Amino acid sequence: MNRYYQPEIETASQEQIRAWQSERLVKQVKHVWDNVPYYRKKMEEKGVTPDDIKSVDDLHKLPFLTKDDLREAYPYGLVGAPLKDCVRIQSTSGTTGKRVVAFYTQHDIDLWEDCCARAIVAVGGTNEDVCQVSYGYGLFTGGPGLNGGSHRAGCLTLPMSSGNTDRQLQFMTDLGATIICCTPSYAAYLAESIHERGLRDKIKLKAGIFGAEAWSENMRHDIEEKLGIKAYDIYGLTEISGPGVSFECQEQTGMHINEDHFIAEIIDPETGEVLPEGSKGELVFTSITKEAFPLLRYRTRDICVLSRKPCSCGRTLVKMSKPMGRSDDMLIIKGVNVFPSQIETVLLEQGYPANYQIIVDRVNNSDTLEVQVEMTPENFSDSLSKITEMEKSLVAALKAMLGIYAKVKLVAPKTIARSEGKAVRVIDNRKI
Image (cartoon, rainbow, N blue to C red; front, side, top):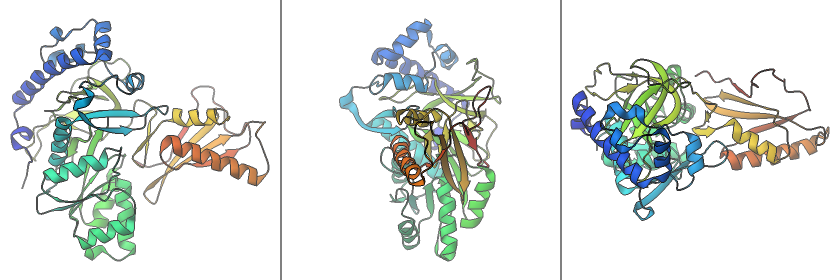
């Protein structure tokens, strides 16, 4: 049986969705023009005024926003509402240490939680369910988003946050959790722990909502088999609100985008030209209902495909495929955004040359990150204790910048292969 949280929206006709989008876009462009000087300047540079935007068909006339704009406008330059009306920030790491800070009014939070509730109801969540939210809480959007969505869907909510596996399993078995929300790698780890402890017949899980990092169909089937559940994908990014920008239904063939709040486009990453439906390209989002942080034509750098093929679940919202890669060099490791430029910044600050290699792998379903760094002839040492000390200091500096642990291996000068063209900085051995 197909269930919807807001059926009148989730199954609305294409004409109705387009009408909502056109009306909200026109209003949002005017709102941004009047309240966000940074974006108004970008529009003026492109020779566009709010009068040029009469419907969704005019969206392509607007300038793009990128991570660079967020960095330049940090912290308050893109805020579209008076700060006295903003009630929360959420944050994620930026390219060179400046964090992405997104603002929310209470209205923004209400709409975000509605989007997450749609995701929970789509996997069968009701007021009879116990929903264990094991995404990180705090600045990361995963925990707060799914927590609010779970409340709205009427589930009994366990706000576990991530880690502390013993406690996770105790609550899961004692309180009979039926839905789990976390990163796919943590779900795989929980599955292993459940098997090791012989708890398989004590758990009541039926569904999992997994996102914040890339995962393969093989990993999905593995988690489903080990936990006896159906595993669903969810997508979002802090800049646009957080998880719940799109979500999978029981068909599990892509994620429905909440088109009453977000307009999606696919562009050619090189030229910026909008591509026809079904083309593979870079995903661009426009927030049409956000008050505090209304980003227009934000380039996500995720490569994917949009499809309007009718879905057996009855939802009419456009579907996006799983991201198939990125048009920039961002890595997602344990759900955290990591840019090689952040690592480079730390190395240069600590007096190392920019000769390094980042090796990413997945061991026992958990991401690992190793940074191999060349010593300079000046700081080169063959004393093991000295090298260990230098490595420890770099580990601490990288953790402060990235927010996650990276193993550091110092190597002798000139041992990392030089490249004639673009240096191969990243070796990603994960099979995704």
